[in-house]
Length: 353
Image 1 (cartoon, helix red, strand yellow):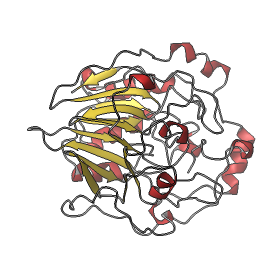
Image 2 (cartoon, one colour):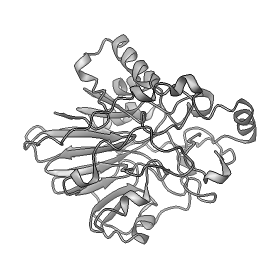
Image 3 (cartoon, one colour):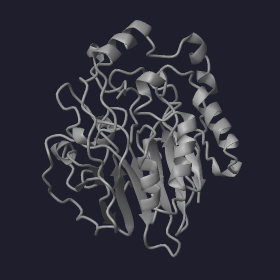
Image 4 (cartoon, helix red, strand yellow):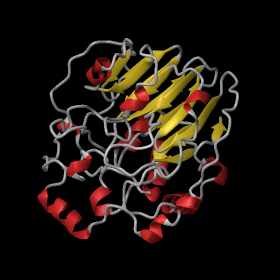
């Protein structure tokens, strides 16, 4: 699996040795389990490598990548940087029973639902380890955020779990994280950390946080491959007469989990899906959806709307920087889906359900 943001800069895009394909894929429970307590202390296995849905790359893949040198776009692909959509604006007011999403860039959203303000994979830093500085500024100034009630983290890669950004938050902020990651958060002083396994949930002030699978992996240092879990989140305003559901995919390749998530969580109103960091496909196809796969994933989920993310912010791969948007729009049109249901927002823009 091939995420180029997770090895120390001096080591380059290092990857772990190949892992065997798992024999068992955990299925969703027949009926939803009761929410887990907020801040619960739990014990986990030492490794989640059995959750991988494809083997990690070995020496042959590294050798090919080094030979091809396809780490970044060429000069022609970078010429689109001035065209990247960036339109910051004040956060709109949110009425009860509505959901508002604001794209801050990459996989970072300001999600307001059920009276809560939730950040997804917040990265407000200008630079992350081993990666060039942002192509576009953060779409929402930190000082312009309302009080943050909760944060959801999809996995521990540096472009999704940013320690300098989390350091800005009050230590009583509720954090919802994958299994095995609470220790990292508690070492940094956070006191309300809830870690979940796939298909588990927790509830905060009427908003339900369901942790669901993803086709990805985890690694933050040279010795912790797959020591913590990875996944996405379904947020539901349970107190609304017509509960709204938002699915945040985090970081994922395409695969069978989308259909299972849709069956387990029917009626998703909006899917926040990654469309970038996909080239070359032989290297990144297992862990990052391309735009066409993101549209397929939206259909598998049964989601009513899709908002593309995970592009236009950091240079993580070799595709031209504007290509994800053009291909996502074309794939949406080919699928015959209503244009107004593709929320291809500029960074800093908002949309309300």
